[in-house]
Length: 91
Image (cartoon, rainbow, N blue to C red; front, side, top):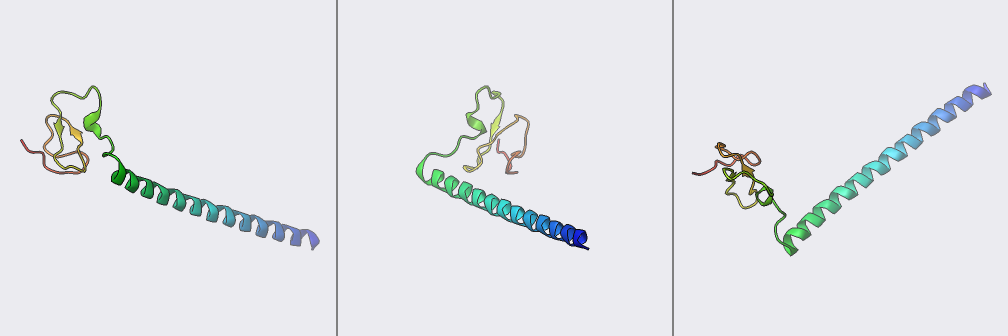
């Protein structure tokens, strides 16, 4: 009887510990996600836009740049639509 009570207590403690660990991992993930959003917003306000694929070295000469200012993706020369945002490419 005592052995059975010990096993139940051990299971309960294990489940409780697992719940606490999962809770703190979830909270940590939410904090990291929020910090990334804040830092991205601050970077947009303070500095120039983050480099897009247009700034890559060695890009093919026949590539077509997306006309949307927030996208700026460097598409293949035969592309009719932007691979990142779906905007029709002019020209």
